[in-house]
Amino acid sequence: MKKRIGSYPRVRIEGGGRTVVSQAGGVLLVETVRKAGLDTAISAALTPWRKARTVHDPGKILLDVALAVALGGDCLADVAMLRAEPAVFGPVASDPTVSRLVDTLAASGGKALAAIRSARAEARERVWRLADREAPDGGGSVTVDLDGVLVIAHSDKEDAAPTWKRTYGHHPLMGFVDHGPGGTGEPVAALLRPGNAGSNTASDHITATRQALAQLPKKYRRGRRTLIRTDSAGGTHDFVAWLAQRGRWLSYSVGMTVTDAIHQHVLKVPASAWTAAVETGGEIRDGAWVAELTGDVLDGWPNDMRLIVRKERPHPGAQLRLTDADGMRLTCFATNTVDRPIAELELRHRLRARAEDRIRAARATGLHNLPLHRTAQNRIWLEIVQIALDLLAWMPMLALTGKARCWEPRRLRLRLFTAAGQLVTTGRRQTLRLARHWPWTGHITAALDRLTQLPNPG
Image 1 (spheres, rainbow, N blue to C red):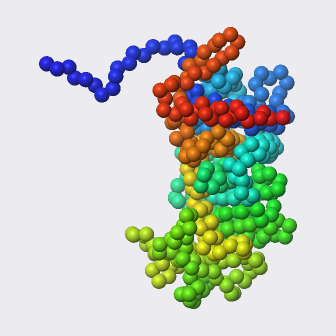
Image 2: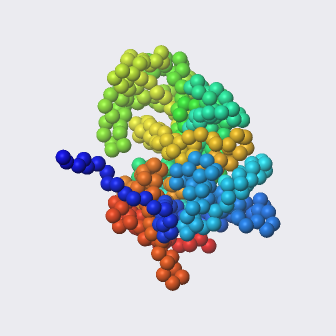
Image 3: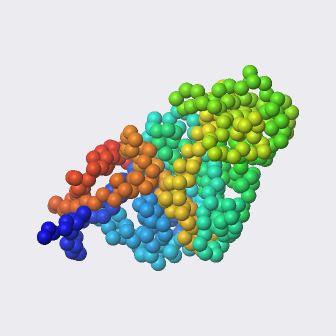
């Protein structure tokens, strides 16, 4: 009689290992914090909220929660994974201390939020200088994408309300800096709103844009080198007029709703006026054409606004809408860029779809739900989520190369952060030895070498 052999080996489990470090790859995020100067910036910004004779620094507490979220946590209590590894993450505050700090910051109104955002902007400017040509402004311009996010609430939290998708929760409006095809992106705005907040609310788009511009280096806070991209939710008279206001002169590429007036103008466009749409490599996009609309359809809009429409054969199985024409799916956007062909401008606007990747990454990094009850507390949580996303964008930008620069949070955790290590003490020096057989140990060590070579803040 033959013995059956299982598919997996049987391993004997024993507790008590002292030199094994879990989440050893998290040192990449710790070193990114250090090189960005984010620890000192946030500690200085939150000094007014540090009580006398306290053991833990408020800035360190907030960063610890952000690191836990970056490593996969989704609530304040997940900071325990850092507390279990003091050799890598240092002393970590207890759960009640973390909770009290969040309550204290939430009670301060907008002062704590302004302090945290100021520290993030300071660190962002330094990181972009360190990244040089790999930075989002390496080409001399910055693109900011605005988009709404639906966050489901599974309990009766403050400001939770029915959403336009017949769910229940909140509807934050977020902004992301696009890193282009060679990278990911980083958050620069997060406006917490009730679930029933309107998609086309111009005042919310203006507020979110102000938040985003405040996060950029000063030379990008106004002027044509900063492009604001939105879907049709941003295609309102008030928002476009604000973007084009004299003295601000931001570039914009804003989706527009295909109204009956636009539909009638599209029907009058002659066949010779349509230009073939293009792909990122310069090749022709099959079954898609673009044209520019002129005339009274632009009445009431800024003088330099261009209205560009695209018609495209719908995908198999897609249903046409009432605003579509001649069996073609119509989409429309407005821009104030005048020195580029319309096919190139349409491609630039179409690349706004990368914002959906940023939203997916945000959902996987603490934005799957809002874990706290009060709105003021969840505003602090949104800042923590943004810090975590900042670190997950800055670390690849500074330390990774090739395709690894485009890895999203889940892949970074699976391949890099979850790597185990052994802590070896020789004399007064502690060394973290990573598993030699781990397939991505080379990525981790090479990334740490690149981070170590960067100059320290100050």
